[in-house]
Image 1 (tube, rainbow, N blue to C red):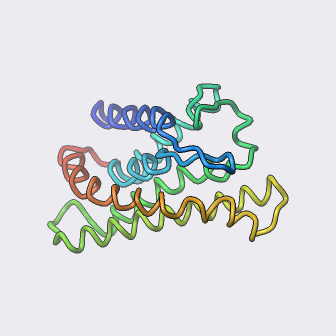
Image 2: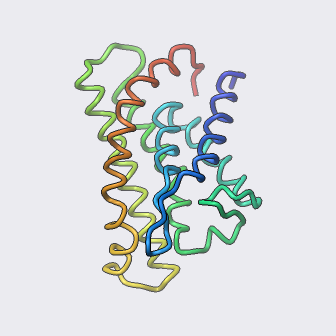
Length: 186
């Protein structure tokens, strides 16, 4: 791994951490944040391994007490009602990046339509992974049923996540080729 890759990983870990300050509070106590979008972007822009590594660094910083989990920090965040979201972040970064690495090889040109479709699929798959882990974590911690978990964890966030996907797709389409141009292999 060269200095450029390390710089990209550190930059994305910092961006994910700083994005905790962008949040919209909801009545249920779980705010809408853009950290999930930044985690997805790290995987889709940096690739599966480097993107997931940036997310792991962010999670380590938060577990050490830095207030990067929606303004909170510490290991206790990994056992609360939103623990599933935190655990999903490296998985969704890896999955989104892997889908793009497999279906949009940087060794050949792809049509704009194919690229946008694959990027959209990667963003949707990453979002589904996040919600599945979030619902599972919420159910385990709160001992609630699926209906309550879906009402608390999924339904209020669908509109925001649709907007995040709409933002991620063109950002990934524009910046992924730039970041991959001189990147060394993972």
